[in-house]
Length: 171
Image (tube, rainbow, N blue to C red; front, side, top):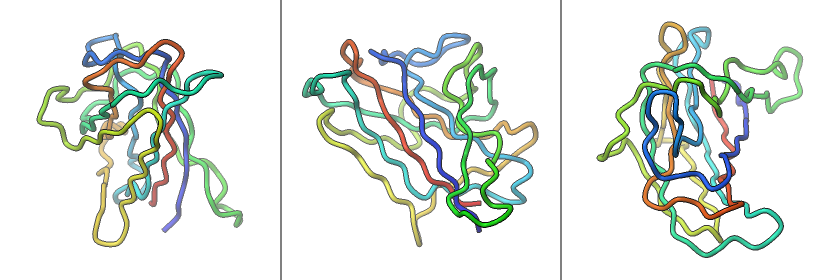
């Protein structure tokens, strides 16, 4: 199996409203599967944090919810997956990547109970490993429709604050 990494950043002062139609609202990103992977994409590690421009982040509790997406929507910006190993044929990016901006948001159930959720303070980082018996997978489907969306719930981020995300997957 090959491992890939990608990063994403939310918009600043992201709201806590659910995504709707062409409005991303609290949507941070959508991790996508690929029909060419020949099986499933396993998320192995996901690290979330908050950056606040040039100052320290305001101390605030945040919750990021996860939802399984069944249609990709219309992405306007996608960050690529990059190979972690420097061997021939492994360094090429895995497509499609992580969608981070949309003109039409992915299809998902944006209401509680969520598939997964994690809460943390803006002045800390949350590091979620899914290894060994723990697996967080995406089963690829036609047109790369399936994914896992991360979105802000509960509290909106203050001015100049944004989420940062680093993700590692295994195919």
